[in-house]
Length: 283
Ligand code: SIN
Image 1: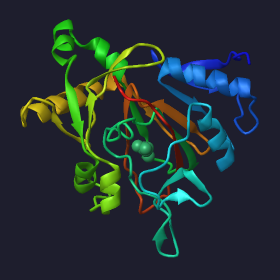
Image 2: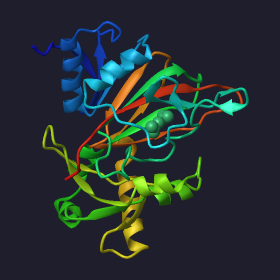
Image 3: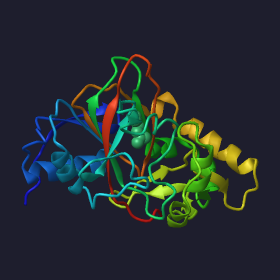
């Protein structure tokens, strides 16, 4: 199959790409493959004005890799276990999705041995203000560090813990059932990650799941992580996405951090579908 050439425009200089002229509901396999190619080179892709069924979303995410399961199953779309609902809506007094799930800078599944490669968010309904999603470019942040700082950071490793994250998170903190704890043991990942598709290095810290820099006692270790997250999420490295219904945004978790932002949930509803494609062991 030949890879089509797509019309694109960077989301911000040097990072991300909006893809034009592709309707994912009926896209040819060659167009989907071309979108994957753009994604691998740009760190994030955006396609606007899409009208997609859950099956369309499943087909598209499968172009990137094996669709990944969700740690918690309660908010998956009925009949579509790979589609996770983010929402502040309730039905019959029960939430239909996780609310404010992605608020706080992080990279998805960082608490797994093989974190997800990409995250896909599809906007079903969005508030007219607030609820932007921000994506920070870890490659640009890495390149902006001095050679001395790069040398100091190169071999550091971070200890990530799902249990810690779920016990301490600002929104949705909870005690986990024993089987979920057993299925999610702590993991160690490099602070500087190499992208397997393009060889580029990225600063790859996170908040929430990180409990220490291996071999560096706290508070120094966590202060270093905070310093690096603050650096990487400066405006110069960040793309801010303002949502419209029908937007499909995907980012590469191997070289970015992202965060959701708050909105007035007493006035507005926000419902998004989230899908993941499986990743590999960071190095
Ligand atoms: C996420 O972090 O997975 C979701 C971000 C958002 O809701 O904007």
